[in-house]
Image 1 (cartoon, helix red, strand yellow):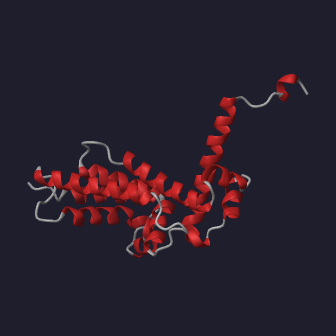
Image 2 (cartoon, one colour; image 1 turned 90 degrees about the vertical axis):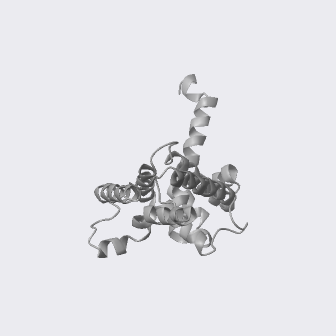
Image 3 (tube, helix red, strand yellow; image 1 turned 135 degrees about the vertical axis):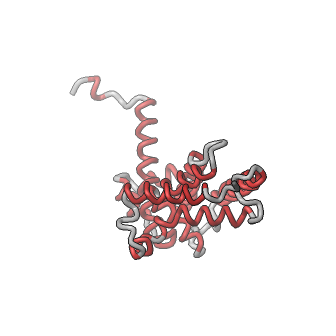
Length: 208
């Protein structure tokens, strides 16, 4: 073995390995938590899915609870990228419809939270991030009502909730979508079709 091959990894290489391990763990955690909730998820299964030693989960995330919070924080960080500043609200809803279907496992995490399964430490820290994001969203819709982009006689909180539910519908209710005649609702073709249709619906709300 050459001296070159015996050298320890550089700091840059170690950083890349660490980032890769964290990414694989987060991806595996989303799948495990969405399938089993916090209570039913197992760290050993997450480690197996990620192909890493389970001790790395404690090292990077402080254990199962910390990993749950990191997964939630990741989703709300992604949500910001789907809401470009000054984009028409129809485009925003379209983005969320595509993003929700493409991250169906992440959407299902919200269902587990809705039934109170959010870990041993109570509601995750991401709850504060979510509250801030949603309050800003409602305020943005209120401003759009003033410009005529949305009807002014509907409470913006109701609009926000309806938009969020509509965007998440294919990921949450694929059997219902199939019963309505939408084949393979989470396929790329169906997601694109639904997102565009939802965008058209939102555009129709604008006052003439």
